[in-house]
Image (cartoon, rainbow, N blue to C red):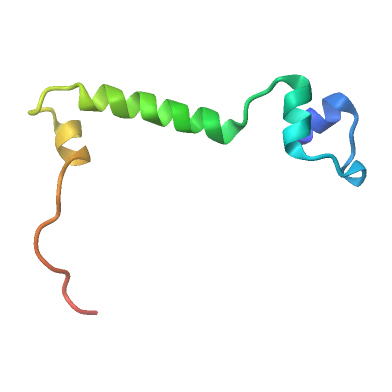
Length: 69
């Protein structure tokens, strides 16, 4: 956001919302982009064979109980 504010020459004193700045420059939110990449990777792992180690780790369950303390 600091770089976007610098591009538009808007300081924090102007009290412009981040959404307004992103819409002005037509830039997507970085957290949305990271979420998309994670989902893309997850879909890739799910399509793998059942014997694949990464798929077994992603869909694995932990049985039993934790010990106290």
